[in-house]
Image 1 (cartoon, helix red, strand yellow):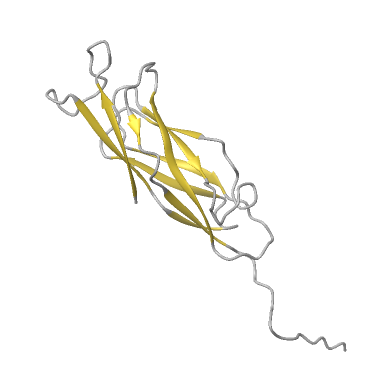
Image 2: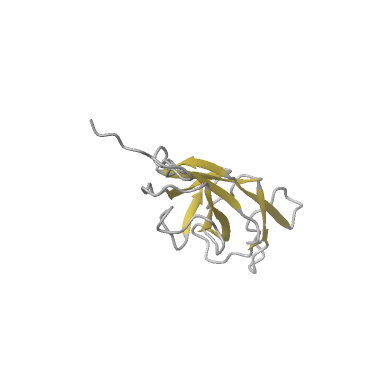
Amino acid sequence: MTKTTIALAALGTGALLWAPSAHAAEATYVVTVGSVTVNEGAQPTASVPLTLSEVAPAGGLCLRVTIGLEGDSALADNDYVAQSGQWVAISAGDSSATALVPIIDDLEAEVEQAFTVSVSRIDCVGVTEFAGSVDTSDIGRVTVLDNDALPLTGGSVGLVWA
């Protein structure tokens, strides 16, 4: 599991955006990006769990999810539907959400492939000023198991006509 730290600090107005207790000047969220395995063809969508270490504050949180990085073995628009950045909302009082990534069922026999999922940005719903930060170096992983038969190799196949 991957952990991303998000700190929510006091706003310039002197009001605290959110804190776990009356004495806290800053709250820290840890976002866990789950890793999942899907079967191409049997599962048309990868459901990647996103979990907060604390419940979301009033107004909720939105996480911008980045899918796929350079160097992944799965290819965008070949193995999964490319998305330029998906916003996933976590409602106030909740601590989890799911990022959905459509998987493409092709006819090509392939080895196991994978792509990355990360949280690249965070914002508060309905809040114009956000004093948080997010570490974008952490990732989750989606592994895609192929459903197509590998071709025969290293031998000969004879046909007999009757």
